[in-house]
Image 1: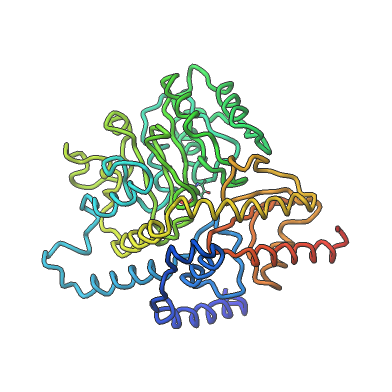
Image 2: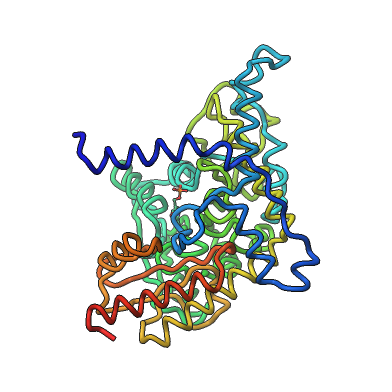
Length: 425
Ligand SMILES: Cc1ncc(COP(=O)(O)O)c(C=O)c1O
């Protein structure tokens, strides 16, 4: 069907597409540490210029997907320009680079995440990595995987498929809403473990609420009972400092195109050691997947692959490192704490946690009787403010570092206006 709306959308997209290369590839200087020392807000406002999101647009939905900044776009574009000339010295260099070990891409990302290169595979997204995990361990009918009631479809459904096809059992525990202490979460997991539990699979940061689960303690609990610990860290990479070997989990998955702002279609799978690797079958294989020299890169042997996407990933890591992940995390927390406290003042119900340590750059509240979908459409159509959540009244607010306090104040002001218009406030 070709309706007026899709015609309009297509023509808007065509305009944006033709304008993109020149605007995206223009180099804009990064702010220096001296500016950060003098004026933190000015530093972040300067960084905002790296992003193509038009001035005046407020994106409070970074949880779905991030926006790749200029250095990332330039790296992708340059790489396409180079590879598409087909001038590679080796006849079978590009475009079948899917067969390489990809050490040059894995190593810097592993380092950012507190892991070694031989523990880190680069895949296409968290969904792909979660499917490797759910399909990869030998399990008998009746064996259990324990997950939370807040897993993303990409975390939960691969297990549901396996349950339907092979008879494993998916057992769920409820996360507290809001969570008051890490111990409360840990106790619920402990209570749900049975002699048949083989794997605990939970998000490190909940997609619904932004709650940070106590990953290190969960991993230790699992280990003490001989259970595999696997985390879906789709929101963690680039949002906050993660040290995977300090967490001590067996498996950790995620995407770099959310909070690290890397190329769309970049994800990862961390596997602790050879022992776990020997138990985790790959899902997609091609020649050489089982060669003894292969480490965790056996899970990324998917055939011809997108190397320009990897070049964008490298640029995203470089940008994050040049800012510093601790500095990014601090900024994320400052913005989210402010927004969280303002929503509390407005009478919302907390769905994340009152403990600032248990959240970072996502705060979720129930703002009943405001209707989420009405608010979402109104905010975007009238004010170019993007929010996300779930029916009836759950709103998930993400605070990527490029937002300014004024952006948050604009959202709050419009939120108040919406409630007034509806006769709520
Ligand atoms: C916790 C969690 N896991 C997995 C995913 C899926 O991520 P992707 O689409 O990058 O595979 C998401 C997406 O929002 C998520 O929030």
